[in-house]
Amino acid sequence: GAGVSQSPSNKVTEKGKDVELRCDPISGHTALYWYRQSLGQGLEFLIYFQGNSAPDKSGLPSDRFSAERTGGSVSTLTIQRTQQEDSAVYLCASRPGLWDEKLFFGSGTQLSVL
Amino acid sequence: AQKVTQAQTEISVVEKEDVTLDCVYETRDTTYYLFWYKQPPSGELVFLIRRNSFDEQNEISGRYSWNFQKSTSSFNFTITASQVVDSAVYFCALRAGRGGSNYKLTFGKGTLLTVNP
Image (tube, rainbow over all chains, first blue to last red; front, side, top):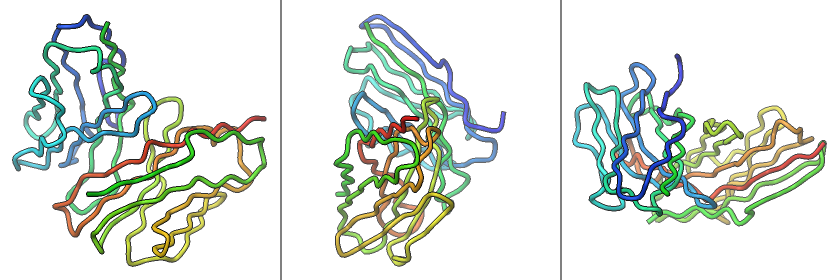
């Protein structure tokens, strides 16, 4: 497809379990972001990847959260020992390059931690 | 630090009414960029517009118009003759600083617009 693809679209898990969320950016886009959208809140920055540079992890809320981007393309956001407060929509976005302002978003993964 | 405030949590209008969504931003940088994104029920945010801090000219695109006023740190969005398809959450966002090194967008909490037939 031509857009940013995220999977799964919905994930229900039990408290304490680990989850992996996947993002396939638009082919050729060098920049990739993860944002979190909680009910009634705006979009909270989590992590940013640009090319081969070290990622900016400054938005990750705790050390239970990690992300990687393999081969400059697909990215996986991992949440270990999930907590109920992790329930949110996790959005991935990609951008063509450093100087292109427009972000292209996926439809997100709705994570529910029971 | 940057901050974006969208004071209107929800707005409900009847089709064909005009509606303005407010956005107030805070930044100490003199170079910054402002954005509006639309999030329809499908969930995928869609880019609407970008303005840079040096261009205060208002912009019109069809039924959409944007009013950028540095004096009041506002970047308001008006939909003229609203339609049901305009129903969505609208986010205002700010990116501050020069060049590609300042890449984080700070988003407001969004305004849910419901256009009733």
